[in-house]
Length: 79
Image (cartoon, rainbow, N blue to C red):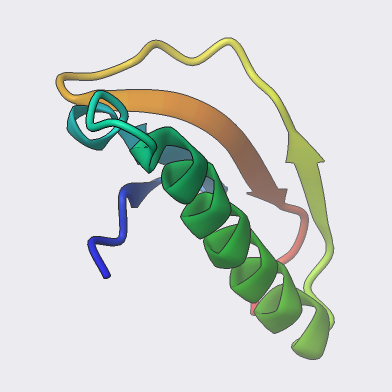
């Protein structure tokens, strides 16, 4: 369970990144996308559970060292 994803909080936005060092290891790209999908699902379940309004979006966010941007959640109201 390498958890090949990271979440970076910037203000009211949560950016999801893939850890790129794992994407070059054979068939691990499929596992990487699967793990990010699971993280996305859990994140959304919690937002829905607490009735937090949000917007799921693909933004023009730069990649950072070792991380590849995937998608974002912008929170519309506070918990």
